[in-house]
Image: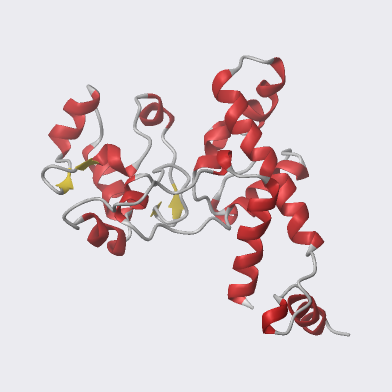
Length: 218
């Protein structure tokens, strides 16, 4: 049996019974869900604790933004990962890129700037530690919701009380997808709650998200 035939059988088994499947558990996806649930606890605990154990993930991932990496839409193939990074971390980073892109204005505004596979400069994701430390994290930090436009360079510098590079700033603005920019031109923010953070999801909920993606793409 070929790999294609095996994949076809698996996708049939995990399909809902109403569409001819057996609604069986996909253990590969469940393994991914369990590992992504580790991300949830890292994000929760590292934000409110000084426990010694958290220095390990922070140190290992320091070159790509630390645990903030798991709040981004990264692309595993574009990340400059340390060759000595344990396989466990590499797997989790690879699975993380299943996160969907923004489809509504408030989702665009909450998109992280750093290590986002949808925002690339010279075909590479960007992460400027000094900008992140200054509090520049999401697209909302670059956008003036009253004027319905991105901040002019001078206004950006004044907002964050920081000196910056003109070309660097506009390279980031240019990297924002055009369809996101069009969403930002809507008159008001969507009357819905912000996108659900993984920190509020259980392993079961994460598994359901991954399974829906599998069914959608099969």
